[in-house]
Amino acid sequence: PSQMLAARVPCVPRARVEQRRAGRIDRPATNPSPTPLRCGVTPPPKRMSSATSRAASSGGDSPPSTYVWYASFGSNILLERFECYLRGGRIGGMVRDMPGSRDPSPPVASSLWRDVPYRLFFAHSSPTWAGGGVAFVDVTSLSPTLPTAFRLYRITLEQFNDVLAQENGMEPGAAGCRELTGDDAARLVRHWRMEASSLELTGPDEVHAGTTGTTGPPAESRAPSELWYGCVKCVGVKDGEPVLTFTCDANETRGFRSGDIPTNPPCEAYVDVIARGLVQCGLGDEEARGYLEDRVEASMTSDAGAAAT
Image (cartoon, rainbow, N blue to C red; front, side, top):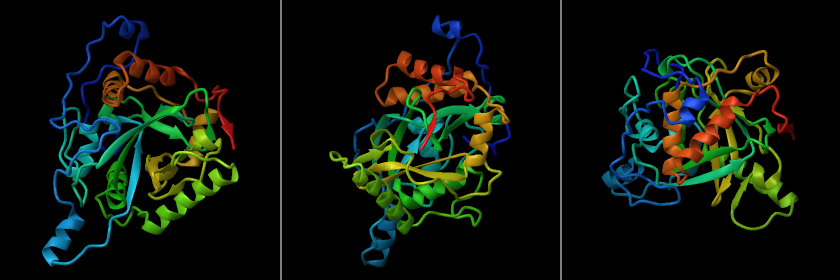
């Protein structure tokens, strides 16, 4: 979601929870993807990447791309919506075309991290979603009682930087977005590996707050502080590559935690988009909606499960 979108989409405000449980609220029709990317499945490439295209046109080899995992937790969990940030355009429910990334290639893989102990919450007032709140995660403390499900997309670092810019209302490559470099990616991986090593953790090459009991490397401001998603956080490592997301900055998070800044429940259409994405990842519809309902209803100021590290 982006706070920069100004038009409104018809949206049913969240109200009587018992109505949804009884199935009496109509839900927007789905927009099935013609080539759905299931979590844990690596599809064949659909198109030539920009790096490969440049190498082919020059007749030489291009330097290998740095790959990362983008950890989505809001509406980008729905593949069809996320791909608009890569190839450009829009799907139903979006009010304007996205410019797309400099490399429009689709994600090469998708996976699900189910229970990472950062708190998902909803805040601000999005005109795109009828004034309802949109999703953020508190990456400054651990919340084992209300962990977050992240859908991971394996994309290039350049694509991640382009998605970050678009989510903050900027064009890919804009000077106002301080892009991550390959050195940054390697540094973040080393940080998580050092934490895992200090705890003598062994096993699969997946490290995150749920395996270490720590919050990991600090988040970094990459866009102006007044923008909602300008803070980049490495939430872990998967297969030797950093797992990156973006959310609000630490000062704003403290405001939500203290109650100085109010949270705001999402509208039904926004919840529906996230739920459909979770279903793409293998959750049942009731399970996905229950997960979201629990986090909408839980207060940020009384989250007893939150613990700073």
